[in-house]
Amino acid sequence: MSGATAPEAPPVAAAPHRSLFGLMLGGFALVLFLVWLGLMAREVYDVKVLQKRYGEADNRQWADQVRLQVELLRDKPAEQISDSLTRLEQLRRGGWWDTGYRAPHVLLQVFLDGRLIHQAGPHGLAEDRRPPDTTKLHNTAEWLYHEVQDPGHGILLRRWQEVPGTWHFSFHGLSYYARPLLLSIPLLLLPAWLILGRGLRPLRQIGRQIEGRSASDLSPLPASPYRELAPLVSAVNRLLARLNERIQREHEFLLDAAHELKTPLAVMQLNAEAVLDAPDPARRGAARERLQEGLQRATHTVHQLLSLARSGAAADDSQLRPHDLVALVGDRMALSSQLALARGIELELLAPESCELPLHRESMAALIDNLLDNAVKYSPPDSRVEVRITPAEGETPALLSVADEGPGIPPELHPQVFRRFYRMPGQDQAGSGLGLAIVESAAARHQARISLGTGLGGRGLSVQLSFA
Image (cartoon, rainbow, N blue to C red; front, side, top):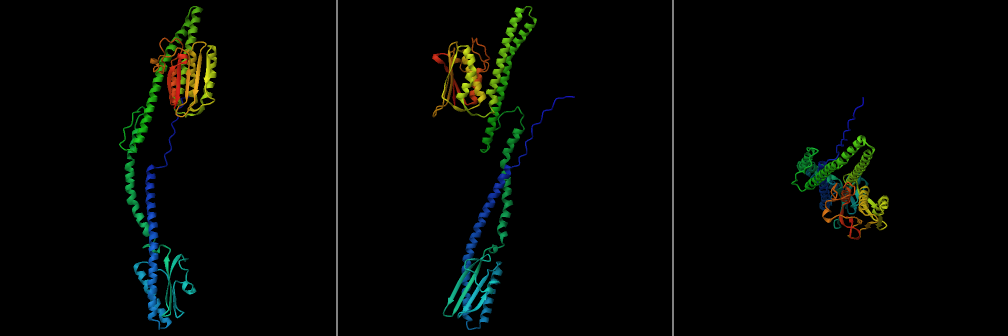
């Protein structure tokens, strides 16, 4: 059993995978991390500079103490002097231990009367008796060198002290610098989370207002008190106003079209009944002629309605693209040439070789066709219709004009002739009253200004379009 197919539901939009809230919160966290990183880098640099300066002073101070110790024990055996210097080194290391720092490594060489009596240092350095290069990296450390000479007592002292190249200078290593960041993250991001949530609340309220509306409610949104949201609300209100205006136009268009088609359809119905019921052939023939005229009028009206729809509402979503206006006008004039030739009317085109403009081809073709159709229809036999195209030059816009030698339009009726289905009083030419309405709609689509004036030879009508 066949049945009506249910309309397909509109596709459900995929849930957005990006969050504006998360983006702002992540940006805040990134700034916080970069600030911490910069401060930590500055701290590391300052500590390294200070430690090097302190290490140089400390190296000189301990070297002087070693020299004094050797002077006091100069007459003692070398082993006793070496033991005394070893205890002095242990005292130095113990002082560092009490402060919680690791004592820097030291390499010490003591010469008495040219003889090496003492050498001490880290494992591996003391045994090979080769001191590290001064200010060069050795085992990931930089070494500071200080030399003391006392020729009067025959003492030569060389001392190298390590400047650590790792995190040993910090109180608790890397954790000392990471702890403030870890502690500050919740204290700073939680208020930021609350502030951002509160700041985005008006945006969510606007979304709920739009979501809660019916499809027929196109009234403007209330003005937002926030400067940042005012452009969004204004843009939405402008869109709602355009939609409302378009719906009103379409509603009026349907009413006018139904009213305009009602009369010829009623006449055609009467004539069709007369064709069927007329008692003699003469009446049936007359009824058939009236029926054909009614069909032609209805067909012409329907075509004009379609042209009006294509030139206006249907073209709203189409983009303007570069087209040669001269070539387009030439093509449309070729289509109108048969009707003009039958009436003895000369069509003349005054234009440059080309004039490229951003156009919607279909609506512009409808505009040109209606201008030519009106000019040929209302011009007397053996007259002339002139089409002129002037390209833009400097601040002067491009112009398109169609002028004829017909009866023209009185200036007081110029505003009214653009209304749909309007026909001038006393007009005997057949028509639907939609020609200039189509022209105005297509001109608005191209943001062109339309003006009416006097035609050729001081009579007739001239329609001019000025493209912005």
